[in-house]
Image (cartoon, rainbow, N blue to C red; front, side):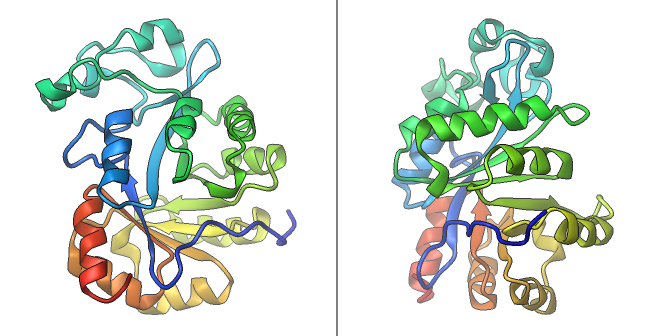
Length: 257
């Protein structure tokens, strides 16, 4: 694919702070409550996960099955939206969040009209319909300029780029995913705008190499203030964190914005 790719959102003079599944240290992950709390704490935006459910909607949820966050165990790709919406995905985090429901991607984009949104595509076996459906949701929201799409699955990223070439994409990787080979192939075949490494893979030399290629370096999951400051000094474009308030304050106090 062409290397002339759109640039991802940035913050002047510092990394973006993105709430990992929202402010998930304090609120139920991947809910509107968690996303709104992240923004209230000073985050520039949020990172979230999406699956395509059985009736075709793009649903915001991390796991393939809902048991961990809802008690009731449904397989997201096999369940209709009505069944998924009936689940309470807030009560496990405390009574204050009882009644939180799984949101749709379109609802999150509408609820956070000025926020950066990192959408991670997840599927069972590479469901390319998810990529096309997510592209449609971003287009309908007019959010192309503030969305970055990422995935561990390069097939989903290729399909998304074909559907929405104006939206930047980033390759996710960690130490368990033969990441060197995957990154080498993606840089040549996909032409991503960004890389999203696990924090444990980040070194000064690697960040320098990735940035020299013109790639934004968005690191997950960073909850220690000292680590966030170190990444800011290395030139990371974003830190993805469960505790956006703590990390935003650390960057301010450390002179990184």
